[in-house]
Length: 403
Image 1 (cartoon, rainbow, N blue to C red):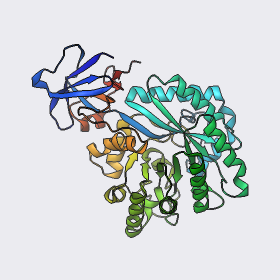
Image 2: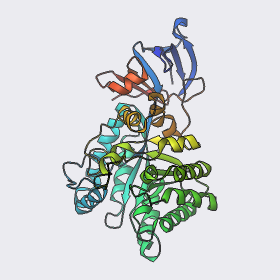
Image 3: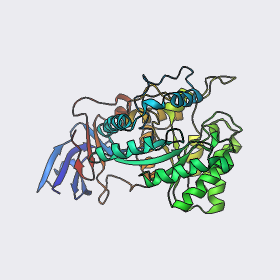
Image 4: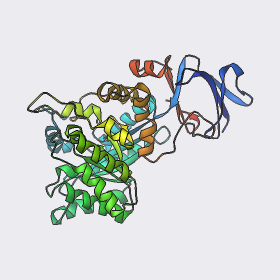
C-alpha cells in the first residue's frame, strides 16, 4: 500500500497539521508549518477540512430501511410500528431487503461511517429472510463498510413457548449473524426471565449479546438493572450491549444512580437512540411529553460507555433520517446536552468501543479510519453537516473510499 499525506488539516483543538498514513495506520502527525514528510506519498490537500476519527453506527435496522412509504404506521408509536411490520412481512423478500440494506449501507459509508451494527428481524413468522438478506448486503458493500449482524429474536423466547424462537436464533447465527439479540421488555414471560434465557443462549454459543432494553417510558420497567445484575452474577464472558434503555430516563435520580453504577460495574455498553425514541415515545403520556432518551449524563458519570446511534432509517419506526453521523451527534447535543466534542465521540469513539473495534486517534500507531469534512470546526460540521461534492472524504484502513 502506498503512503498518503493528509496536508494542512484542522484538528479538533483548532490547530492544523499533517497526517501521514502507511500500511493502514497513522505513522506521523506534524504541524502544518513543517510541510509534512511527502516523500513517496500521495498528497491530499485538506486545507479547509476538519479531520476526525471515522464514525461507527452501533445500532441500525438495515432490513427495514426505506419502508416508510410501503409500511405505514398510523399511530406513530412503538406497538403501531411493530404491528405494521407484522402486517406487511410480504414486502420483505430476500432480494428486496438486500437491495434496500445495500442502499442504506452505501449512504452510511458515503456520510463517514466505516462500520455498522445492524439488527435483523429473526422471528418465527419471518424466518431467516432478514438474516439472509443482510448477509448478502454485507457481501455487496464489503469494500466500503464493515457490517455486523445481530439476530433480533422475537418473543416469547423463554420457557417451552420460546423453544422455536431459540432454535431460530441458533440457525440465524449459523447462517451468518454475529451477535445474539432480543427484546426482553416485550416478552410474555417477563423481562428477567427473557434476559436470563438470552444470556444463557449467548454463553452456550459463545457470542456477544445486544438487547433492546426498556424501550418504554414506564418507570417501573427495570430491565437494564436486571441485565447488569445477571451479567455480574453469571460472569457472562462476552461483550454486552444494552440499546434504548429509555425507562431509566424516567426513574428517580437515586434509582438512576444505582443502575448506572451496576451497568458500569458489569461493563455493559449502552446505546442511546434519539431519532427513533423521540419519535415513538411519549405520544400518550399522561403529563407533559417527556424526552424519550436514557439517562445519558448519569450513565457517563458512573463510568459507563454511552454511544449513540440512529436506529431506524425512514421506516415505520422513524419516517426520517439521513444516515449521517452529524445528524445523530446534533441530536445528542440538543437532547442529551452533550458538548459537540462529546456528542461526536458518542458516534465514533464510544460506538467503536461498544462494537469492540480498535480505538482511533490522530496519533502514530492508530488505525487510519478517518473522516475529513469541509468545515472550520467540529461544531460547525455538526451544525451544517456539509454534504456537497467533495465535502466528506473517508479513509478506511488507510485507503480512501471511492464511490
